[in-house]
Image 1 (cartoon, helix red, strand yellow):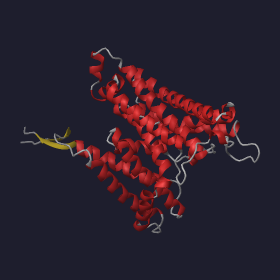
Image 2 (image 1 turned 180 degrees about the vertical axis):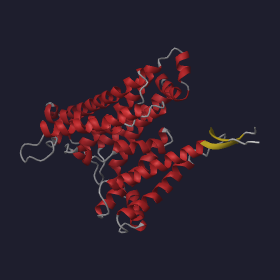
Image 3 (image 1 turned 120 degrees about the vertical axis):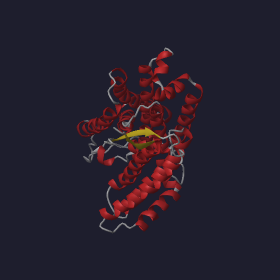
Image 4 (image 1 turned 90 degrees about the vertical axis):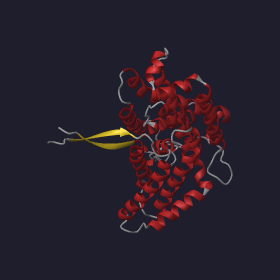
Length: 359
């Protein structure tokens, strides 16, 4: 008698409570990060050094403030598309296209003569740039059913190289010949809150975006359509609602919000663009993915996740300053936690069942 064995993956009837997965991902991811950094540094970066840097990252609120606010905006932008199961991995490209158009406004259009007009135009142009860059990926996803994950990811690097070319060939600083653009005028620099790295304009932008997205999901038909898109697109079709248009709107609004974060970054933090951009980036577009996931796609959870990831981002910078590694240190934290999260969320939702059949 034969007993053929087969394995199938089935959804758990009672998955783990939703709050356990992000906490486990943080703890396990940090442990993995410590081990990696210890090996990478040849034993120079001990777990104590990492924990000390993490403690400093969580407690130095003045330094953390601007990173927190930017991650909240990017995280909200990604949450909009993720709510509809549209996996926008192109936040980094949309962010920098926003930076690019905001820099163009500040440096070349003449709107900088007035502070209010200059800053407002920077944000509006960055909004349009992020929306356009996301729309380029949304169109093949909506009408050709081409997976948006590789498309949006590749568009990040296209954005990098476009900006690199523009900096070197068109916008390069002339006086000293540095590999960067001119610094934006004083009238377009955002006003920092004393004692912090957070600007007034960035704070207002973060609050405004949070409230508007909350209102969209709470009270508008578009918010409802995006939520239904993730679970039952056939219901939208049967109701006469265009799934194609809903996909376009979800991804475009996502890019629009992230583009505004790019303008805020230029006005509050960088004040210029440096070549090569892919080596100068703080990686907010990628860190925002982790913020959205750790929030469990709940808007109220985005600030909490942004605080945690922002603190880890600051901790990674502290480790770099201590000479324990380069810019990749921050990515070690983010990558370890994100990978752990992906594994744990899969384990919590699904299980492997072994089936034995008698013959």
